[in-house]
Picture (cartoon, rainbow, N blue to C red):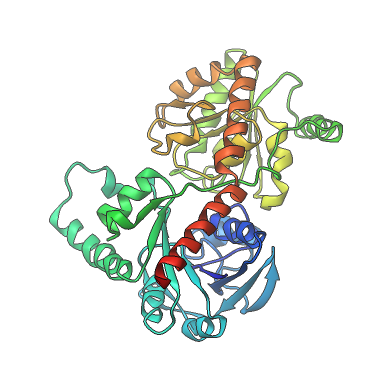
Length: 402
């Protein structure tokens, strides 16, 4: 079976993202050839703060075109063009004709590229899937009790109508969480019967707790080099250091705990506007963004993972590393934290302080971490997800032939 994933942006360094991880995992399965088509744009290319936050780590927003082998699949970088800020891929139809895929998977249920794929399907007989990864935490309309007429008209013309047209050509739309599925149906034009819940995954071989002697030695060495106290309970946050992510809330909670004599410290990996304020908090260390493959040792050297607001795949990386996690009480994807973590009142540093105190007990941290590790292996492993997804593709192909 030949499978083509089509992205609106692609960055090899972001290998924990589904756009890289799922093609990589499916490419390891027998009888499968995997291709990825993407424009010559890096992820977050449209973020106004890209030059300051991401360019030092990822390079320029626009990258080179070409074809290369990467992680077991073939990446095709094509030229892009924009209309009113929306990205289209030049030569997409020509490339699809050359590849002759059995299945094509786009990552969003609407938008220009997904619309291009729906159009090309009229001439190229592939099975077409889309995806929906926007959660309620970053989609304000989903949290409003009443939506104004102008907002509805805007959503209808820009999301619902295009999404419904595209859905006529699709076999199904993979929603990453239940609230992603709700948004897909309510705001993206995806028919409920075509909405399939399929959680994101984690590389459980790459992310695992320290057990071997060299890993334990590395853990102690890294903690010493970063200036963490021997008995410190180190909390980790990875991602943008921005207001919508609110890592400063964690830094402030750590500072309060230290003032009370509790042995908490913080490690923040990322960059953004809150960086200076976080660095000013007692017990907090900030490091620049790291390549995904460089992150596991940092997860193995800390004790707790904390993401104060929005969902993040880093939560899964932490759980796979046997870390208890703390997340916002507004998190919809509770399957990520049930049995292996705790919730706090979002943006309330006092409540985060209270919840962190519950994890002073090493036994509680160990038990929560062990539960999370086992859950990641059984349910959230990219290998397991790849097998389930390939089974879907094969079933869709069989049904199309009936």
